[in-house]
Image (cartoon, rainbow, N blue to C red; front, side):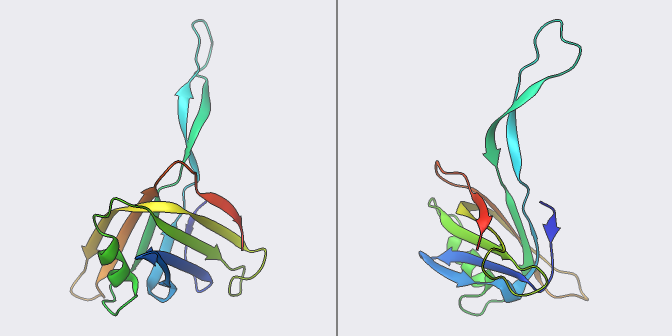
Length: 143
């Protein structure tokens, strides 16, 4: 999936096992549906050959720094350094707020990094990276 932007993305991230809607602070979400591959090339083959082994989905969430309780920065700060997974749910509305049968990505992730950045003429921004946690792969399904 490509990087998503727009008013019809709903992002919920757990804070102390309670889902918090941080959508109003989100500027973009990158959801790469990728697979770790194994080299299957044999001697004498004319081309490199590979096969998918395990799915990987490293989420990149970019947003505004908002220190208000239960907003993006507050949730990210609470998840910083945890050795447990948080449920991350991303619902994608199709030219309208997300509703039944719209795409949804959900899974257990751990917050790998939180980068804070700013320029003199812009708002303070956050870039969060979430990596899959546990034995179950994130699910690409519908609301």
